[in-house]
Image (cartoon, rainbow, N blue to C red; front, side, top):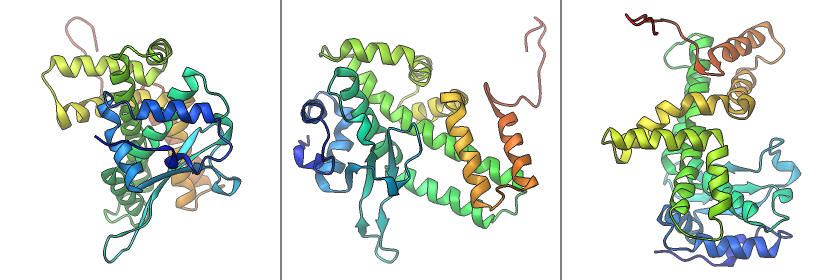
Length: 277
C-alpha cells in the first residue's frame, strides 16, 4: 500500500492547514483501498494538485476540475502531469464535511476523469466531434458527444461513490456527515440503489460498473439543474463554431428536449396487458 506525505499539497498555498492535515490522514487510511489509485498517482507525480488561478477559467460553482496530462506524441512519455485545480474558497474550513468534499473532489477529478482510459475516451470523443469520420449529421454527432460527456461525468461521480461507500462501512469521525451526503445527493442515492440491484443480478467488476453507468446516466444528466448536459451542449456549439447562429440555437433546444429531466426522450412506447408502459 502507498503512503503519501504533505508535499502533495504544496500547490495549495493558503489552504487551511488543519483541513490538509485531516485530509492527508484520511487518504492514508489503508482501510480505504478505493483510494489506492489516488495515492499512487500523487506519490508518483503522475497527478498534481494546485490552486486554481483566475487564468485557469474554472467554471462558476465548480469546486475543482481536471486538466489532462500532456504526453510526447512519439514516445508517450509524460511531459506534464494531469492536474487537479481546486478553488481556494473551498479550502478555508476544516470541518468534517469540507474534508470529505475535498477528498471527493480530488478523487472524482483526479481518478474519475484522470484515469488513462477516461483521458483517451474524451480525446476520441472530441476528435470525432471535430473530424466527423462517420459523416454524421449535426444532431447525431452532437448527441454522441453529449452522451460521451455525461458518461464521463457518470464514471467520475461513481468513482467518488466508491470512496464514500467504503468509508460508510468504517466507524470513523466522518460517518455521520458521510451518511447524510450519501442519502441526500441524487447521484449517490442512485448509485447505491443500482449497486444493490447489480449485486442481486450477480454482476461484478467491469460488468457491474458498466451496468451502473448505463442505468445512472439519466440521473447524472439531470444533476444540478442539468449542469453536465448544458455544459456538453455549450461545448458542442462552441467547438463547431455555432454560437449565436440559428443552427446552434436549434441544437441547444434539441439537447434540452432530448437529454431531459428523466434522461432521454421516449421515442417508442410499449403498452402491456395491465395498462403499464
